Length: 71
Image 1 (cartoon, rainbow, N blue to C red):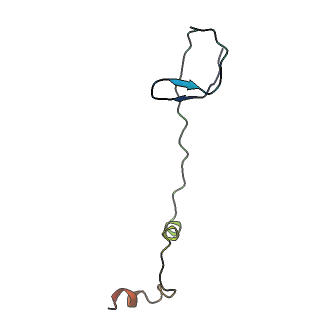
Image 2: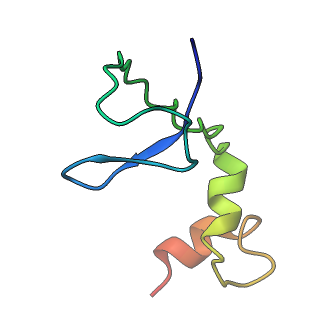
Image 3: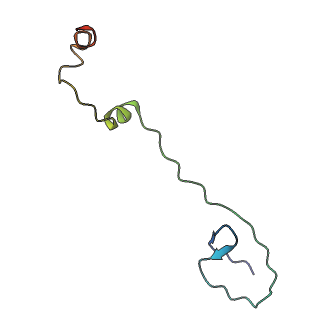
């Protein structure tokens, strides 16, 4: 018999998410396979810059040197 079951490891034992129809003391083979973590797409530079939610004057890019070097 081959059955795929989901289980959670609680730092001591595997806890099945469903009941299984086996007689007590039945020997079974277990293969451990962790699901792959979900891969997130890296953020683009623009997405990163927008996520910073920076506040500044609307003409900042046109007058960059003036804002950087004026005292």
